[in-house]
Length: 625
Image (cartoon, rainbow, N blue to C red; front, side, top):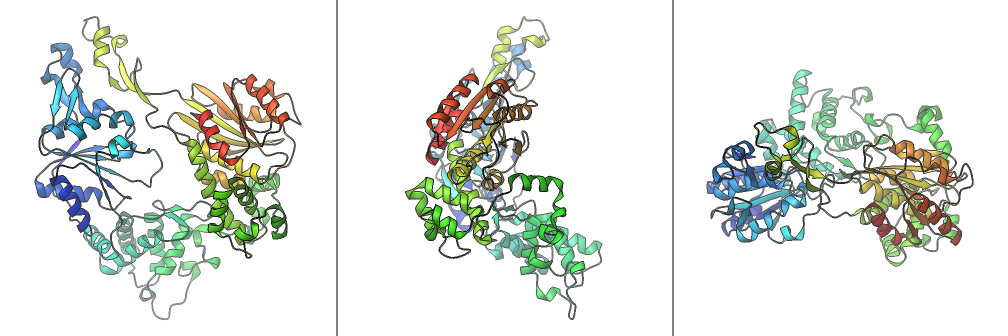
């Protein structure tokens, strides 16, 4: 907790939002400020608070914020010496703001556990809170709760419950106009106009580039100006001189590459996209008269416009440049592309979705998805291996979005799955009541007398095994891709996941303990086609090896297969080291369903038939919940 009474930075370009926030606070409303990073949420709040003369009690929201740390708690040593008296209670940030007529600023609201947020419900409604053994604390007249959150960040966040959202006004902040961002950068850096203009143009261009899902905030432009100014001074250059373009490229990579996110399915590095943007916005005046483009000096993009970060293409470098691992992987999968004629024979809707060579009509596909999800998913999976290169690239980008979105439905988890429970481990907050119940009265208390409270939950390690043998194409590929996306997206602090595929050998798509974007796993799966025999025993042994190092209370395998083994040992003999085996049986025949039920029974798990794409999300929810 910090109390911020410092002079705030000036607010630029947020006049309307400032007026709304000022009136909301004046009319005793609580407010959540919502927007991407770098849009001025904290600056706006501090400016309004300074006008009203109120202190800001700052709390950083995170998964470890407990109710006791937010509200306050009794001092253990003082209670042991003098009992539960008001003077032995230490106010947390919530009570400090309530008693002091201050503004409680909760940053990253959607990262705070639900059990902690529930403490605020009565405060927001009645302006008071009942604290055990202390009594009811009523808020002073000037108390307000202001929260901030970034709705676009999906890592470590959760949806804020309706009980909290219904008790707060919402002010949405977007990026400021270009002139306002220039003023912000100039004020923060003190740099001259040309560097500020270039940095702001680069940062703003990242928000609109077709290959980027997330662009840079104005903080990226500030860092870019500072790095560029320092590099120019170190190298004895100016922005209009020779070599300045390469210096700007170095500064741009360092300042912006970590702030942007490449769109799913786009096989480009952040640096390559930034090179393209820099080449587009580089001012002509910065190029000295008569100077020729020198690729070696970085004054021109490499062939193809990919930029130096991309490196030589596999085609240019030859097959040996891919390395043994990539050659092995390519030969193992060896996907066969599909021509337009074959697509038309397989899929009735193909001419509507791809009316011309290289064209993918996303509106037509969306309509097909609404009418017949299975036909749409099967078509999209086949399009991802189309002979038509442009169509194939467009289909892969669309498949990454569509299959991840469907998988996200199956991975949806209720917030608040972790709970604060008493524990004897020396971590978390001291549970004073339970400690006093155990205390023998001898000072200091023995270690075995101490009881703490910490977040806990059953930790599980889950491995998804995807059968790639046999007729792995069309709808089968789509079901596998959605299942993989759902398993990857379900991972959290209590659930760690991995994804393997198998036929007569086993391939790791996502290793246990290694984070990989769900979109990337989907792209690997849509490139698969069925081949080889089905060795279930080898697959289960591979899953056991993957889960063996896991620190978990339960090791679970989810097998997506018809369970009809055609090679290797009996699958039931390979279940050692696996605590539970669930089976997703895609497009099940009577024989396959019978085999799946027998194997799942031996593994102590469940069988979920998946006849259609819409069967998969609820099936995943049942297996992963």
